[in-house]
Image (cartoon, rainbow over all chains, first blue to last red; front, side, top):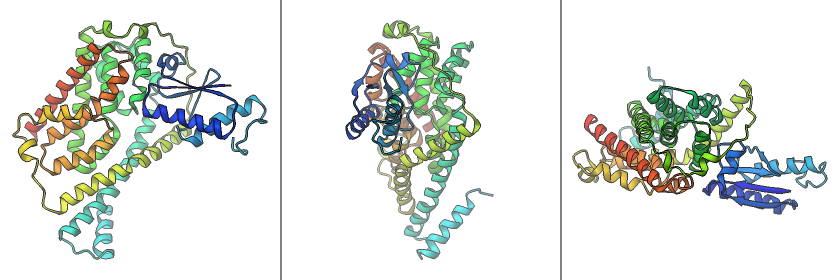
Length: 93
Length: 322
């Protein structure tokens, strides 16, 4: 899968990118993580805030940019894709 | 009757009875002021943020831009945009996508600027902190003048026809229509609660610092160190405060503790308000982010017009608050 963080280069955006990298590493999720400052992508998705987390081309709504909430959101995506087999977040997704 | 009387009663009881500090001494005044103001401001903050978040859930930016692109009365549109800016949470990270989104929806450039000026400068957190520390009159003055600056500056920018100074790609962006979220009353209440907790968690430190400084100044003899340099009689204090504010970047919550020190040390109220406005509305990091969509000439024009508005407001309040 492909996980992208779109942001305008602010501190909050970088924090989200770091959270995503940590989650992917800790949960051993097979994903390619990219960070992009191309804000037109955000607007094209119909959104008007930044940063935005996008998984396989679809924006993911986050409760907050904390590692815990990012993990929850990504695990939920992974769980749906592979019928919960590859998710290792201990039933928390 | 003062609605805050129970808090005063609690602060008196805690400080004079439980801590057994003598009433009327500098220490007693300081501790009492600290207890009373911290509780009062945190309570105000929680209640007002909750109410504003509820209101805000009816104005998501996606809806705001539709609404603003349809409104037809020139300066009234700017005023509306500035008013919506009050209830919009704003982080400079979102400035660029917001800008593109507004322009794409056909919101006039001047109206978009009114929103961009008002959103970081005027908000409920500034309102509460100013109300708690300096009284409701100062809070009202700040909000009204902030909205006025945003309205007028946006209107002037609209008149100047600056569309050519916006990067071309902005006009080419096409937006995929996002699904509009339908929120129930319960969903809105939940959103408001979560937002309130988030904000109180992130600003309580600033509140405590701001009040602690204020309390020390309140209890012990005020220091008039800055009167000579930044008091109402120094003509250059206002533009200087604005210039100093530009490279500093902070939100309203982070600025107010500094402002409370400056005022306690003798800075004139208008100068202090101008400083606070400059820190929140004219920020170098935000300009750098906006450079993605605006040509440098447009950013300079924007800074000059908003700066002039802030300087005017500073002089104006130094003149009327004596």
